[in-house]
Amino acid sequence: MPEIIGTYTSGLTLKTKNIITKNDIISLCKLLNSKDEYSNLCEFEPEPITEGGIIYKFKDKLHNEFYKSVRLCVNHGDSKGYWPYLKDNYLSEWNGNNDIIFPKNNKFTLVLKSFNRAPLFTLEELEIWEECFNKIGIEKVGKYPTRNSLTH
Image (cartoon, rainbow, N blue to C red):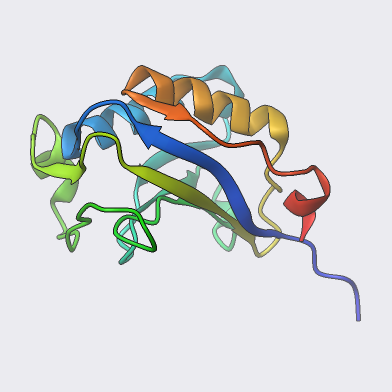
């Protein structure tokens, strides 16, 4: 049986410099969508999961089985916050919405997941995410994961 390679590991540890709202999460997705590295590959949306996350929506229909996600781990462990149930029209409801997702000075650790032959996470990719998080008031406070941990 061939070896199945994916990513399932802790990612960056981050801290909010101010309150993070639903609109900030939409802004994060828009910032990621604007990056050249992703322009022909995918788009980003909030993911309808309990702990909150951002999902990669791959554009090529041949890659429908790909699954890649950055989990935000809202209200998990020492992290505070609230990730609501996402209804069908959540994108329009979140745009411009100041409901709080994370409080100010909240520390949280990302969980990186890529399965079903989706592209693995890379350190260069995490640098893009860090840049986008910085623009919405979230900063890195921990180390990057090792390259080796991104392939398990």
